Amino acid sequence: MRAGTGRTRPTLSAATSISSRRDGRARVPWAKLKGMKTTGAVLTEAPGRWELAELELEDPRQGELVVEMVAAGLCHSDDHYACGDTPVARFPFAGGHEGGGVVVEVGPNTPGWSPGDHVVLSFLPVCGRCRWCSTGQQNLCDMGRFLRDGTRADGSYRLQLDGEPVAQMCGLATFSRHTLVDATAAVKVEPDLDLEAACLTGCGVGTGWGSAVNSAGIEPGHTVIVMGTGGIGANAVQGARHAGATHIVAVDPVTLKREVASQVGATHTYATMNEAIDLARSVTNGQGADSAIICTGVLEQDHVRAAFDAVRKAGTVVVTALGRADTEVAVNARELTLYQKRIQGSVFGESNPLTDIPLMLELYRSGRLLLDELITTRYRLEDINRGYDDLHAGHNVRGIIVF
Image (cartoon, rainbow, N blue to C red; front, side, top):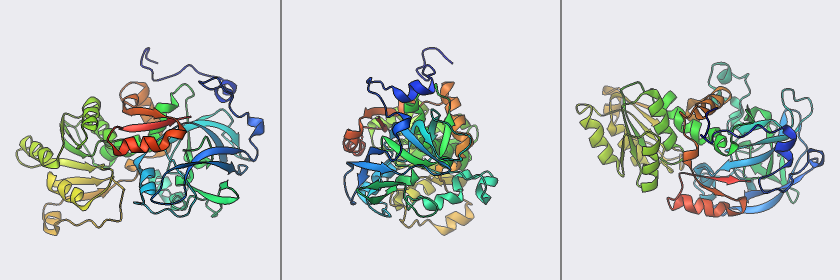
């Protein structure tokens, strides 16, 4: 452990980590969790605003965990549901899919888990048995097909509001003080790690970092353009740096995001793609960037066209942005074929949650992966709408809720 980095906290006993808070108020004891009620942020319509509601958690079944949340990231993907960019399967809808917390109850016959375990929740569960998990593609696990509906695999719901079933964002609902999740979506982490920073690895960090390290195929000496440097794009910048890129060009119209991109590894920052393309060609003898990674808050056709134009022959365009993802994408077929360019989709940066989340946290512990620097503002759960207002106003790279 490096002294003075702020990356770890003193190890707490399981009893201490559950029963005490920074503000001195007692947390809910384990013995009183049966049929418990908690507070969570839900949507009842879209477009709509987050509303706080008293949610009831079912008793955990086999293979399930009750988690008391410590922190949750205000990811743009949740905002897409609130804005209506992404359709909601059913209302009420409990938001949040990036978070870290402490296990307070374990379902029956669920070996390997104990109250007091510290976890980062992965928005992609990992069954470990399907074709994708067994071939090292955990991000494509077949269990992902249940996430859109926010239910268990059998179609039942874990949460209720006034007796009505509540869908969970990606099966998690991290915008709740307590939540009930499938154990396949929890990754155990060391108890001395700061969960406020570590929670970001459950979505934004892995998605951006992996988009560069895994999907873009970046090699030492490459020139890379990252389009959009918010909570995901800033981590694509970090991934490009780790992969050895020489020129890392960050593009974002928001000054704050360009500043943070420079702090975490960008060698050049611009407000427009035209400026970035000119730079990429100037340092590659006119060939263009080796790869362009699209991490914009909302995906538009023009983003893909611009990235496609930016890359060299045999270059790669990585599409990580998801908002309004039903948008049709069109590129010049002659250029696609004769220049042998590649358009690559990327889910969670092609990362494997069970191995890559601990890997990223070790990079964080060593000071090589910057997480604290990404957290712009900490909010109370009651201020969640202000957090998203700040995101829209360009004031946040990543805001988090601290419980």
